[in-house]
Amino acid sequence: MVAATLALFMAVMAPGVGAALVTEANAPTGAMAVVVPAVDAFEVSFSKYRGCLGEPTIVFEDLPGRKGEYRVGLSTVALNPNRSVDDMAQVVVHELAHHLMIECGIDQDKPFQDAFYASQGIPLGRGWYDYSDGWSATPAEQFSEAVSLTVLGTNTGRIAISQAAAELVQGLAGPVAGSSVFVPKRAAGREVRSPSSHTAAAAAYAGAFVESEFSQLARRTSLGPAVGLAGRLR
Image 1 (cartoon, rainbow, N blue to C red):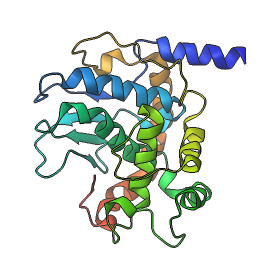
Image 2: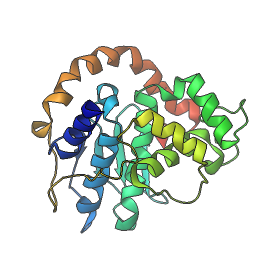
Image 3: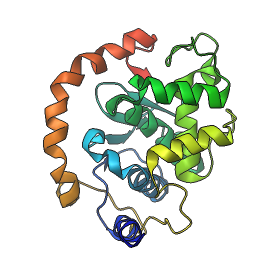
Image 4: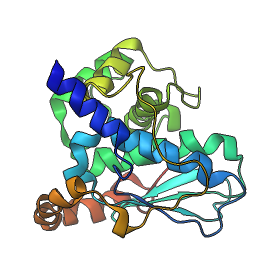
């Protein structure tokens, strides 16, 4: 109990816990103050996955018809600067959930998927990236919405997440997720992280991340065409 409490305290208080790079170019007024804490919240909640999460990049780019997207194989989340800043916390966490499930192999974890499908009432024969019944019926999107709910306590509301599904994702995240004492401790303002601000913990995982890159490259780069989205997930 003491060790778990200490680990939680260190994760919450560390000023540079994350490895993601949030770029300020094209960011609308107030966006960085919303997006950076949301990224921090995601990284602290899923800190045990640092080794496979690596160093994703969050950029602001015009995305006609979309609030955001995840670019498979590039470890990049794009946010539409022309959309509501108030929605950007949820959008960035949703897209980072796509990064998590691909880079950390959750989209290949059949026992977890079977449990998640059952919790959401998804037919077991449906593919993780099967968009044939629409965005909201796609398991990958339901998972990302469950991650948003776990990290932020809210999601888009377009997908109903069952209590059982939420608990499964909380189980992936570990004891930090959902903690009432979890509050990102970034300084207020327009702070932008850079590679030089990465923590020693993130650096320690770099070797394992690099070692896994080659074996995952083929699957990551071929995933986009397989789901019919040209390497982009919404």
